Length: 143
Image (cartoon, rainbow, N blue to C red; front, side):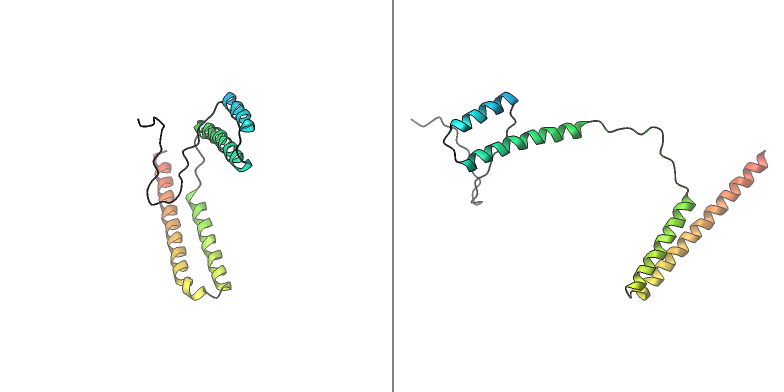
């Protein structure tokens, strides 16, 4: 009669033994396994492998608990940065980039691109200024 042993299948063609997923153990089970390992006739390497698997299971649970924690909510809305200030920073970054490229001997390759980007930022600043001035005029006219 056929044996009732559980047999795991191995994917053909890999040539490697596949390790099952590490099991999770309770602290009591871990202690029992440690005692059994001491009494077993496993090599040091085999015992270390089993212990490392148990440690990975504990570490996995610890990390899962960290990531399951709800995110901390901010008090009130984040302050909005002024778009003009952002544009000034972006223009400064582009100037610094162009200076870096000049130091590397690449200024001619990037000069046109960067100056166009700076021009676009300046145009956006002018449009924003015009819009703000118009809003201010309307606000003053209604009072």
